[in-house]
Length: 53
Image (cartoon, rainbow, N blue to C red; front, side):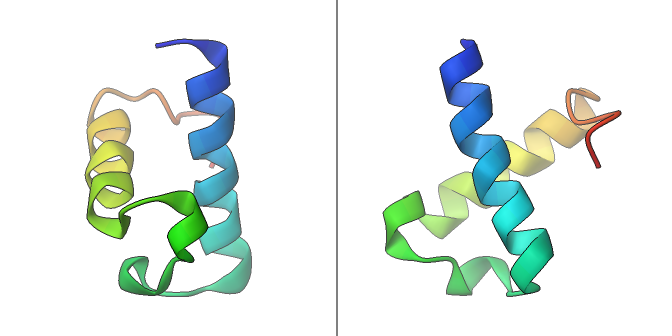
């Protein structure tokens, strides 16, 4: 995983936390909501998000 990918995805995660929207209501500019949701869950299981959230 490159830093650019992590930076882009973390922006999506922070957007969702800030706005408080369900995963399905993410703007399409962020990509497919289900792919973003699955990536967040995968990173959470692997503890890649520890210290950020």
